[in-house]
Image (cartoon, rainbow, N blue to C red; front, side):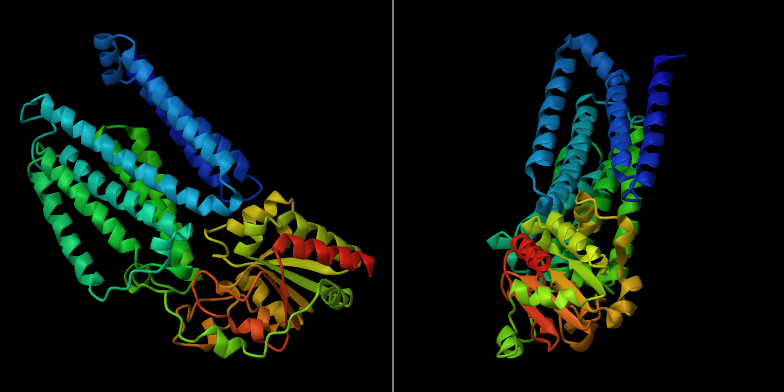
Length: 478
């Protein structure tokens, strides 16, 4: 069997591992195994690529330098990835995902650009890929555009998730739609130019510049509760850019892996839009989740009731059913283990404890599931929004820890609210609601929450972890 046949067999094995990994990552019990299999598949694909004919020819012509450069690049990239994985806290996972999406887009752009440069320098005959409107020309243009949009869009998303001052406010310029239309027309003309004249490196990089600007202008207006959708969509873009780059260099495993990521990202985007009652067009072009319609003073004045851990413990002592609602504040405080201890203390008293999970709680899909799994909380106790909402009227106590927008009744009652129509967890219908927060500060959507001033709500102002530990101690002493 030829060496290329062995390489193709390795690619097939890697592709199979990717598919199995995606399947396993759909469930929390098998997700870790899926991650490992995906990593093994990627390692096999990278090693197989090192034996491709162009790499071997380069090594023959230049000695061991190409192999040394590959090894150095692998060590640098692996070192950066390992450092990010170890240093980033769980609260920073959305930002990390945004950066990784961006890196994938940038890598695709440079692969296409390098291949175009090599093809131009080789002065290939017309029958070769530099002929107009070939697979090479079309794939190169699409890779440049999608990769650039992904990279710069992901950087803007990172800035928003990190709440950097220059990205904190959404871009609401009334002319932004015309700017986007102008950039879109420019990118279409440049795509046509690259496909018609694929030997022009200048047109390719002009396309990359226009795509970069479009990535920024598309992401800057988006804010608030719509950010999880953006993360999913950028993830899909990074996969599509990789798939297009696979067509540029005729690499089958890159096409397969990119297609898997692109398709799964689009499916997840659709699920997130449905969960938030948003249209994708509305998220991308509407600038939703950015403007408050009323001030906090109008809602909270004289109505907020603060309580101590001892008072809340007395309420919990008489509760038969408690529902815990985790949010981003829980992730910031790293309170998932403290929550497990509180649940254990309640269950010893015969109380039924469940967890209400909103699809977009936190800053990315599945954020709360990952946090609670880290604390070994049984997956069977995690209940989805549609499943648990009808049971809130029979719930004695709902404990909201750091969640805000996903429990905001304004989504149901205020048609002018930026989150109007977004499905929420109906915690306000529970007999008693305990909200654990540091302050009355708004959530990521930047709007006040009438739940905090409701008659059946008790506010517990404290750090999430300390609050739950103190509450557990007070309950055990009772």
